[in-house]
Image 1 (cartoon, rainbow, N blue to C red):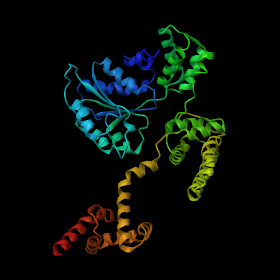
Image 2: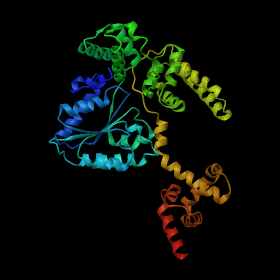
Image 3: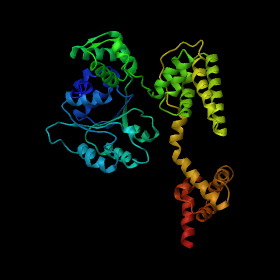
Length: 427
């Protein structure tokens, strides 16, 4: 078996129609690619395909390139860690015509969320420059597109969601492989493989090949000892769906602890989407009461550093919220990204300037930055808004930058800058 071609490569889709499920993603992606081929002007020059591992993101891109005769330039996160790597390979490919007779290209940057925001900062800015300069479609893939470091990329991309594959689709694909490999397979064995894969087709195919290496007769008895339960992480959307659908306490607790975000952020996701899922006022009250108690325990954990209390946080935000539903019937709703996180992301620059001013004030007045923000900064804003001449003298004494002055007086900062220029000229 070690010398054979891995089945995930052997049975990789060669046409768009062979990509399992993901019809909604195909309806978005294929017209976008066709518009590129036809030379139509694109509002978004890049597409971001996002979803859990093994759901077909990369497979769809590869199948599209083969079906439409496009050259595929593929790089993963380990290939474009630096600006130099992107400019040497991807930018050249994205701005030049093919040497091999292809009409067009697809530039695929796989696993874009694998970049480190600090260590690979130059790479992220280089990707943005690449999107601006490209004459060919750029496709990015990610498991978690909501990472704050990808916010600027999201704004530039057409977002295309991929969902975890349903069990029936996974079983159907496994059956086709069994028929092609002339294996005798029992439905219960394939069903077990699909259960363990949890929507990850790549994992399911690998598991099937492992079982087939032991026996050509795929039975439940042969399959069960080989498989191992994977500790999967779920996107916030999947975690919410699992939480609100839970019937038992252990299911709800697993939903909140298996999310690929921290528990504080998960709490924000739950608070934001509770009104969409629970329509009965009493159910909603009970759920928010449980969430509020979880927040109280979390505060105690932070104050006392008693991490044993964290178990109560998970119980309340998981089982407490899920079992609060008594009258509301479960329905399929579209979940929203927490507005608090979006607001913090938008105001991040302003908060950084505020903190920088507080640090300057703290050094000059020999107080803490917290006191400077709370007790000095409000009065400083009044001075800068009402008396530009005196504000300029303060700005000169504290050596405030132009951005700091603009933060303190957005409407009259030009007057303050003019007065500051006069003071510097006189000095």
